[in-house]
Each structure stands twice: as C-alpha cells, then as structure tokens.
Length: 116
Image (cartoon, rainbow, N blue to C red; front, top):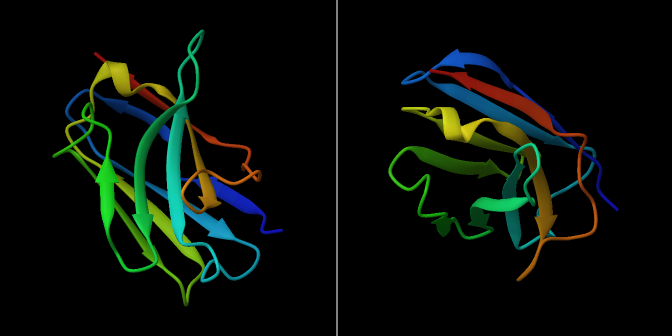
C-alpha cells in the first residue's frame, strides 16, 4: 500500500497560481491512474483531475483550461499546476493512486485558499 503526502498549498489571491505536489512512499508505476480530488468546507470530496500511466489526462469541467496534472513515475510524484485561481477553488486538495476508480489510500491533504 502506497502512502501519499501532498504539499504546496497556501493562500493566494484570485488570479494567482500554485503548484501542488504529491510524493509517494513507493512506486506509483503499478497504479494506472493518479488522481487529484478536493473537498471544500461543507461539501463532498470532488474529482479534480486524473492522469494515467500512459499520460492521458482528464479534468473536471470547473478546472479545465486552468489546471494541469502531471506525473513522473521515476520520481514517484504527481503535480497539479493551478493557474487563474478562483475563490471557489478554495478546498483541501488530496492525491490518490488507483485504477478505474480512486484507491483506498488518501494523503492528509493540503489546504488551498484563494482570496477575492
């Protein structure tokens, strides 16, 4: 079971950028899909982005064109580049290793706060 540690969150003004990182304790090669999810206060955790082992990506409509997900299997890491941030992007962001669906392991998350 891989352990995941997210970092890179913080406070940023609307229109700003942040890059989130997810470091894995073991190989992520065996996981076909790496995910980023987020959870805002009082809301359910929601899908943000995914990247497959082959490099195919998919994004939630709300972040499409603003966020970019990438992974490096050799470095056991996944990133989420977030541009043109909006107040509604405020949430705790989590990465996950899975297949067709998210796996059972979640990191502790990293807080992103976007001020208006």
